[in-house]
Length: 355
Image 1 (cartoon, one colour):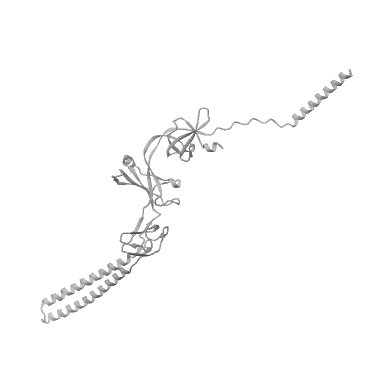
Image 2: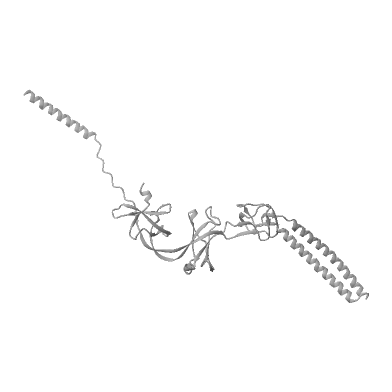
């Protein structure tokens, strides 16, 4: 009997302790935490067939509208250079000097000829006046006066010729100083001090950086459509920059060897640094409309020469696929040449979606 009583008391104590512990656990336990919400799916866009502006991209190069290759006009050794490549110059500024000893001698000889002709003219005038007085006194015949008049006119012509020779010699002397024909920047120095200059031999190249244009070629099969274009944009791939041309000119003559026509797109004055003559460019000419398969440019992934896109399947999972793309089109789209079909969906900003 006593044993049963002890067992019942122990069981009651255990139950009481368990109840107290459970009450304390419920009282101090934190509130239940909700299950995490499912992550939002990344944004996608559909690959579509759209009617877009048809643009022909003509390979081009940047050149200066105003440029000059300054050449020597006399023979002689280059004795001094006053500028180097990259220097800014003004019109008429001295660029180089050529040895002028020969032209100095020619100027001296021409001036001596003028002095000689002036003396001969003075003598002829005195002889004419003397002969005219003798004719009035009937001491000489009219023929003598006619001869004196002819000698006077000949002396006057000789003086004019001598003065012209002096002017010519002084002009040649001025050619010893090579001067800039335009305001601009020296792009190249084609000779060095001590080299022999000759008429027509280039010495310095100068261009005006304030007036640049892109010059390319348009093949004849797009000439008819390109002739109707009144605007164009110029891409600068090396600088990742695009500018609108201020003027578009399609030359009226074609190159029979290349079967193409030259096109010129004038650029605005405000250009990014690095746009200099010789820079590669593309002239984008609108030549009508066309139906193209396009996708958002934001869905494009580039890995070196590869173009990729995350294609979202029916199960909602993206799969990386290699594609081939063309030129950008309006509306932040890019043309799809291969790898995708109309109606497929691609993931936007795929690199950000993985973060």
